[in-house]
Length: 482
Ligand code: ADP
Image 1 (cartoon, rainbow, N blue to C red):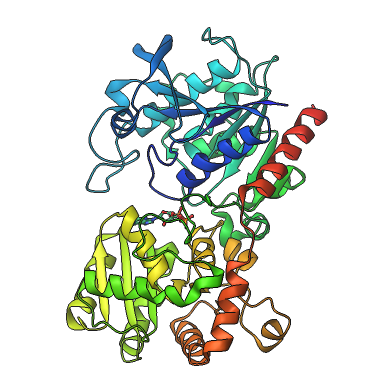
Image 2 (image 1 turned 90 degrees about the vertical axis):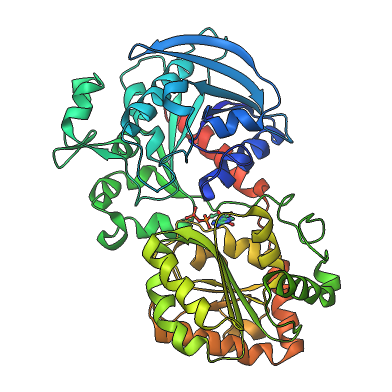
């Protein structure tokens, strides 16, 4: 049994902007089930405080003259102990965890997450009177990057794991910010947190953590290449012996078509004939023509370049002449939102765009759709293709990262050997996307074959048990290596 401090800037259901929250809301639960003594550390954003029913004050401290309290609560629906870093001037404000409601990054993000990291470091060293010292401090993404860096200077420290959920987000600030935060000067060099004269939070994790992981084996290989490395491929190559990829699981309680409370009609592998009732319900809700047989293509996503919007938009003129209905739910960059809305307004019978973040609708779209669109330019793991597979909604995906590790193309051979569960683009272009859609539509016309592909998809095992076991082995390895 290891004591694990799991440090994350978001965790479902308390606060979520993307996949990191799903992981941080699931992996600690799975670790606890495997008898690990796990505590989750999160900033006490106002949204989090609104969601918890009770908490107790367990520690107090001051960082940068700002009073900070550590509040203890439980992750809803589980027995995982959550410690919240409560510093109202930094975290208690309207807007998102990283940006205001217009999408502008908070100007004090460096200070906000430096305070969070200092609290994580002091808890890791059992300095806040919590009477608990972790064996492992497991950090996630740039917001936690200073933790391995600061802990590296301490003799009696836990081992550190740094998980990259998305290398594109790095937490880069100017040199003055580093000075203003009074961080140890020993960390300022090209093998430390300095990044071409700038100050990089993520480098603190990549350079100093005992072990680095990413959320799929393919992404672990891809980030060693300049194309996916965002200037950090050289550093990662140096650390390749400490780098591995562990595929995320999914929260099978929330994402189970057999028990999903958001669905008009629950179904499973053996009652797939009921799935179209969800399509009809969504068509009615979105005022689309009601037709159980028309293939519905769904997408739920941040509307950013990474998610393939530059491939999808040029595909729309052809795609919207095909006999399909397209439903996209998302928020993101204003120009993508605008273009999608314009297309949807011109094709009201075929295309609905819902701009916003809507958990219930995301479940309904997964269940209603026949095909799921995920042509990402890169995808560290990706969760929606796994949710789609679980819901018998066949993904159309690019051959990158976690998509390559989970989606098996419906080629003749893969169909014959019973592994096919979706469609892989030949390359990342609009024509390749259209060809994959055509391929999917032609197989959709063969109901028996389509049912077989759905059954293959729904039989995949994406439970957290196997991922949690991999993490536990990694913790043991890191402790043994010390
Ligand atoms: P990323 O973390 O890069 O955004 P992932 O596929 O790993 O992508 O995870 C995204 C998660 O956020 C999924 O659970 C997805 O359903 C959810 N999500 C994204 N956009 C929305 C939205 N507009 N409404 C509801 N859920 C969303």
